[in-house]
Length: 400
Ligand code: FIX
Ligand code: ZN
Image (tube, rainbow, N blue to C red; front, side, top):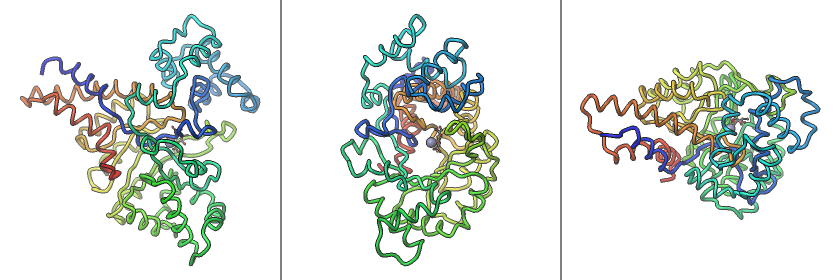
């Protein structure tokens, strides 16, 4: 095919996206929905960069309003220094996509121009070609769970997922919440399952997720509640999503910006896949060290699907390297990216950055098979890209 490069890039830009892991909430859920330039600058990736680049007093910084914080971040990272990190470039991508000429303006001017655009979440979905996002919903956070009492938002655009980290981290609190909602139960295991049944009915989640450090991963199969939870997931036919390799509070003063990477042993992931062959497992690992083994495991377990470039992995140099590795070992049988967006506007940059990398990587692979006389058509490229950005997720979540 002539113009293969342009064809791949055009198809990628026109393909609808299913974003399988975000921390977004619909605009109707006002207290939790984040949008706008001030929130974009208050991203914990940029806050960590600010803390380690300057000598700013962390406690004082956290006492400031979001407005004041975003002003400082803009001044320190975008004006006094060259905004060259991936998180900074993300902000520049958003501003340039929205045609805001930030170089010649003060931060106040940038903000007021941004505000005037009055972008809604659905407009941002449209700009970014996002058709659906999966939220992260904690059924043990009473205030956040009110979302499902309202149900005044588009449940086809914002799908739910149940985040169960609290069962491992704060069991007593979880049991109290279960008891407030469930009158009759046999034992604690039965209580948790009955509560999961209740929140399932309320939210219709597309998967259940847990983020684990190494110790939690190692002891996962020994946890007395896990066999019942896995049986429950099998009955509901929804995957267990494992986000592996986080070490929470490496620097606790940094708060949300203070989490780091743990060293994990993926032998235990393989054991979960072996012992529960009827459960579907979605997995993303935080450290570069684990990517090769994770990819090999996805070749060995039919019930395991890799997704995304999570957090510290979401760097262009690493994405290119590991995307190639995944294609080399798995073909197109993985879910290449999720945004992890917390602020709706971040969808713009997260997906533009990824699509540029995907386009280059796919072009090289198609070019390579063309040299071997394989005739690739635009339709076939379109099918491939749809698998990567949409269908692989939909199929694994049983939505299609
Ligand atoms: O645990 C998670 O789902 C993480 O993605 C987040 O909690 C993390 O803070 C984040 O925003 C990473 O992108
Ligand atoms: Zn996340």
